[in-house]
Each structure stands twice: as C-alpha cells, then as structure tokens.
Image (tube, rainbow, N blue to C red):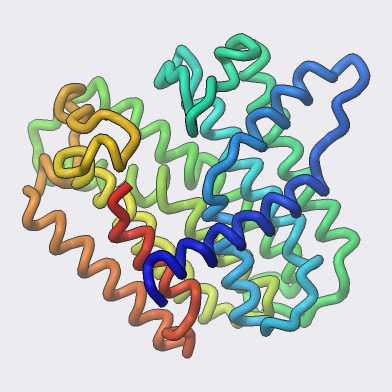
Length: 314
C-alpha cells in the first residue's frame, strides 16, 4: 500500500473513531455545563485517533473482520478520553504552558486553567464510566486464560494500570523530575530515559493493542507478545520524535525544531548519538514487525501503521 493510500485508509478509520466518540459525549446541560463544554471541546479537537485505531485493528485481527464492534467501542472511546485528558493537563500553565494544539487554542486558553483542570479530571472519570458501562452491558465473551477469566475485567485492569502511576502518569512524573536533574552517571541517565519513553509514550500504545487483543479473543501469551510490540512502537515513536527535533522540516512538522537542545533536555540522540538513535529505531521497528509475523498478522493494516508511526516525518 502506497503512502497516500495508507493515509487515506487511516483517515477513514479516524473518521470511524470520531463517530464512535460522538456516541459517548456527555450532554452540555445543567450546572456542570461549562466543564462538559470544555471536555467536549478538548475531545473533538481532531487528530489521527491513533490509539483507538490501534485498539480497533488489534481487536479485528483476533476477532475477525466480521466481529461485533460494539464490544470494543466503549474502550476505544475511553482510551481517547484518557489520551485527551493527558494533553489538556500537559498544556496547562503549570506544565508545558502551550497555547495552541492541532491548530486551535488549548483548553486552558479558552476556558481558563481551573476549568481546564476540571475538564481533564472529568475526561479521566468519564473514560472509566464509559469502559465500565461497556463491560457491564457487553455481550458474553469466551473465558480468558490469564489470572482472571473475565476478558472485560482484564481489559479494565490493563486500562487502569497503563494509564496510572505504573504507566503514563509514572512516565510523566519521571519526565518532570528529569528536567531539574543532572545525571553524572550515564547509565542512570539511560535508565531514566528508557523509563520515560516506555511509560509516558509507550503505555497507552501498549494498552490499546492489549485491550483490543483481549476483547478479540487472544490468549494470554498472544497478549504478552502484542504488549512487547506496543512497547517497541512507543519507544521508537519517541526516538523518532527526538530525531525530528534535530533533522525535521519545520514546515512539515508544524512546529519549531531544536527545542530539546534549547531546553537542555536529555533525549536518545543527546545520550547515544544520531547514528545510534536511527539504528535503534530500525531495530525496534523490525522487532515489532517480527512479532506480528509470529502472530500471523504481517500483511495487516496494523503492521503498516507501525511503520508509518515509526518512520514518520511529522
């Protein structure tokens, strides 16, 4: 599939996710109307909807193209709500203090920092309300061969763990601490950087793939493999981001390059060098594709999506 053809397919899937999201939007009414408006403003800001797309594709690979999509819809919506809440909080003055995201004003600029904070809180809570409701009302699924037999409970466990202190939030914490820390031990610096990339970026990618696989009927061993693939994609995605911050085209990226160097931020490139960074991206990409081949999914949209994300130019 050519690049243009793939991007068209990705846009079609993002549009599908958009329609799913709209089914779960809270009504903008009552005394909580303002925070709900801020939540919906944030959630409908656009984007490629990569995480719910990955979840959907993993689900279809294991369940089959004719599978009941209503099983995974609530979890797709929940994942995008969690991702969006993290962006709303990242943009706050106390964090990155960004005024624009995806070409329009960020939530705190439009609604104020206080209401934006509540909007992020509301989206996180709504994510679990949505996923739990979907699990409670979803059709019966086959037993899972992991520690718990319920596939819905396993999916909820993955969602909560990967989004929390042992996942994305933990990675964000380490990233903030690292900004004010100078590491004299290079091995410690490498360990911290790996932890940040694995959790801040990788955790939601891993959980999207894992939840899709679990709900789609995958075995425990197959879910472990898809988790490893997601880890590779997440880390490679971040390393490529570090590379683009130096070699990228500002017009194509839509943002200035060189911000990592300017801010004195430790990246894979600054620690290992550009050649090693590019070599690591290829290694991680090849490993992720090998895992898909082991699972029999090498000729899949998901495999093309992995390559697209890892080797992107913007």
